[in-house]
Length: 206
Image (cartoon, rainbow, N blue to C red):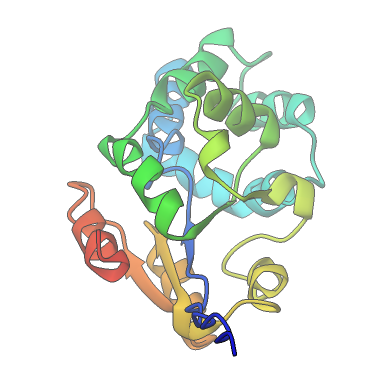
């Protein structure tokens, strides 16, 4: 009698959730605030506060389109129009972080998902130009989904069918990390030097 082949038990698929800017790409907002300050005479801190109070949520959630944002930001800063250099600063600031060299290895060990508070018009072209999109199973951008971290809705779509015990989340914003941890997700706060990537390597056994 022929023996039946033994079935190997597959371990649960791991999921690695990564923020975009400050984790995979350079963070563009602080350079933008400095560029706006140079054009308007305001302090960068004042520009940042203005952004958070009047524009952040609507811009990231897609309730305000990009053109309206530039017009409104310029007006709020006392300018007739937004200098073209502002948009250039955003693009040039989103350079690949050193960790991108780990993405091919990580994508073989886990399902990679990018979840970002951002404008798709800004982020998608940079990901494509750097040939990064192919490493991710899913790319969730707030201006399309309408859900902005740290609101729970931003995580609900991801976590509904995900084994939390096999999930790791990385973000450079403490509020977002805290929110994910409150939902039972193991989370890392990304440091500027990229030391967090070694913790991901250890988690994946790379």
